[in-house]
Image (cartoon, rainbow, N blue to C red; front, side, top):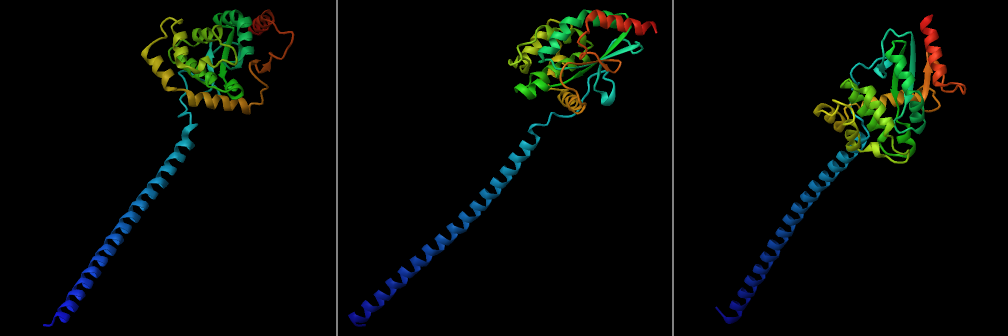
Length: 257
């Protein structure tokens, strides 16, 4: 074989080797693109799933949970916490918010009179809890305090804890009741209330859904604000001449028939 032929064959083999290497490189690139596309699809699917999950979390983020009423709750939809004898001839209906300064003023002025009338069997009080200050000022103190009061009702300590909350009410702009630690601290002022069951009820927000439903009832009730106080269905809080002594006189007169 001539030198020229040998050179030609060698050149052909080299060209074939080069083409084979190019083909291998192309195959490698194709496999890389396929794998890369698969990874992108998986990541894209994961992103979609993540967005759906995030949106689902947002949808349920404001959910106050199931409506679990406190022990002994009565009235329409079980939204009233009763105090006093069921057979009492007069009923005082009180819509209140534990962050509401006007509610505190009412309680401070009428507390002893109301207690005396309920203790004597002449008056029953139905407490309805609202959260309008949370809506107006922000925070969760109205709701958390109402939940804690409902937890106290479960323990048979509603009246005492109710009074402690008002005696220790923070300024309206201070959402101190939004901290469960503060509510638990105040519970220690009520003998026998600071128990594991009460603490769990407060920390878990057991009655938050019930509180929200109660507040919805307040908003749909056409009331002008808290406190709203009705004696046998008549709004007495709007009566500018009303005093604790006058309330007592009205209840005692009704008891006499």
